[in-house]
Length: 148
Image 1 (cartoon, one colour):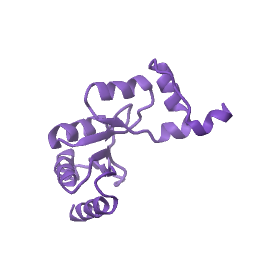
Image 2: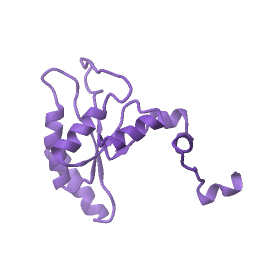
Image 3: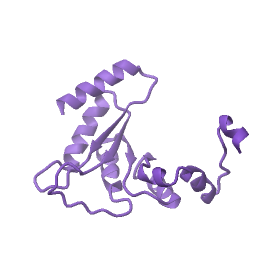
Image 4: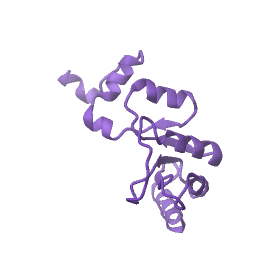
């Protein structure tokens, strides 16, 4: 934990106060007797004190003994717990693929933002499709206007 806090402080010092600093953590390793979400609540609070603005709560992947309950939004409760108990802004990840699912996570207060990884590799236009599906008019960056 000490190294993570040193890195957080160094990054904060390097980027200044006007740039957000995010830290991705593995909120649990899903192993009996291993790292738990309770440990992550403590870590997240310490990271916030070291200048981190938002904790991206991922999990697992560190042990072949892990028993990970993979399913849509399976890591969202980890972000929700850290947000609630550490009082830190969080980002939710983990098989978030539908716009309504992402919207509900935010509306329910389970996280402050949703981060997409593999879904954007599969569908790079996901943000445009999501905006349209949720009733917004998706726009294009000015640099793309000539292409569309």
